[in-house]
Length: 238
Image (tube, rainbow, N blue to C red):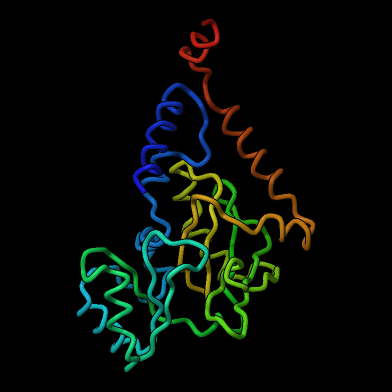
């Protein structure tokens, strides 16, 4: 989406004039929500990003059941589950890669999603909120997305969630990503959401958290730590 990229350029100009942008424009450009998991391989299930349909087919044979998704989708759109020998595999690969012209992601299917769901772990300035929102797929669908009919069930973070947060959170905070959502299935991070992490309202309502207040407090800390910019004063003076 070139309009999205252009928007980050405009926001970056505001940032250079001293405005605190949450999240940082450069981070929004650099951190594709599917691809950026590759920077933390210790946290992820076996994953392949490619536009080579032969490599996809080989990955399916190796893993026996996989999830296939485009790199820029959201809300569960165009996500497929394939089993070994599925006659639809070739057409799915063709569709997602536009016959080998676009990169797509294939990942080992994690069966835990059926019972424990796709958990959203929210990070505020690198620190995890104490509860995750587990999105349990409906009986008629494989996708753990609220927009695709999944049910949101809050649960306390477990030890694995906290370990994943320690592995990933500080690195993202150091890049100016103050509000991030990790998607966790079966103890593996499948996506790192930096554009519009959801789950706040559900967790606040059911767990009594005040995630918005945590984020505003983080913003205020960052503002207090920044020197006042001379060009902001000049702009205020006309």
